[in-house]
Amino acid sequence: RRLVFKIAWDSHRRQIINGLSEIMQIVKESVTNERFNWELYGDSLLRNQLHTTIVQTLSDIGLVSTSAIAAVKDTLLQLASHPEPKVQNVAAIALARWYLDGRDREFFATLRQFWSIAVETKLDSQETEKWQDYIGSTVAITISYAAQNASNDKFLKQFLKWLKELSKSKSSFVRSYFGYHTLYYLVPVHLTVMEEMLKEIAQNHPDLHDAIARSLALAYKVRPNEVQKILDLWYQQSTDNLSKSNNNHAAEVTFGRLMATVALTYGEIEYDDQQKHP
Image 1 (cartoon, rainbow, N blue to C red):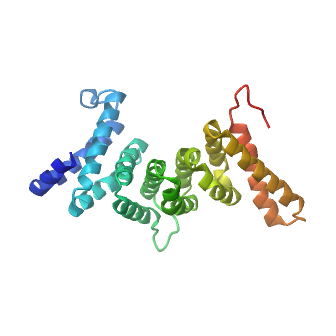
Image 2 (image 1 turned 120 degrees about the vertical axis):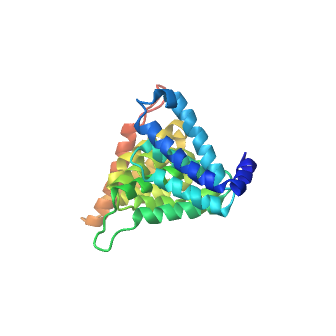
């Protein structure tokens, strides 16, 4: 399939570039006008199949040559900046496929380029615009899909810094996607290597407590002993440090937040009848 695209790119480049604009429009219309044009887009199942085909097409075209990746990047960026999550999702999956296909260099270069656009602010403002937040959320979603399939070693080397950067985003919109999408996807898979980072986030970003709790509760379904061990450790560290704080406000805040995350997690965990409640 990719060989066919390479041959076509060499001989019909202009037509393919024009076709990318049409593909982008189809994705947008299939989401925003899903109740209309039923004959063209069909039901939700057919639309999902359409999106899958478009994802594969965009991803494959982008990897046939340097000039092709530049053209596809522009299409993916425009999809990423769209307000509809389903449109952003198409861009995220297409980009994540580059990593899954072993094209790490192209994947991370594009991811960094998108993130730079997402966080760039004007000289007279510290806030990003809404379309930039959509790009930022697409970056978070892309990392969810790509890092989920990385080995623990690769995850540590390639993605951990990305997660820390996302958690510190100035955009509450991006942090929300990071918490309720990225963590939700990755914590059950990479719990062991994420433990310290989760603790650090819990102690510094109270707006992410609920997201951490939900992701740990999800991880509990597949790794109950590991999650329980983490919760026990955090609880012990919190009680020890709070009892020794001597009215140290910083310590009370830091370990109070960690304790709050533990409590929220217990509230989210769904126990089987045979399992003991703490």
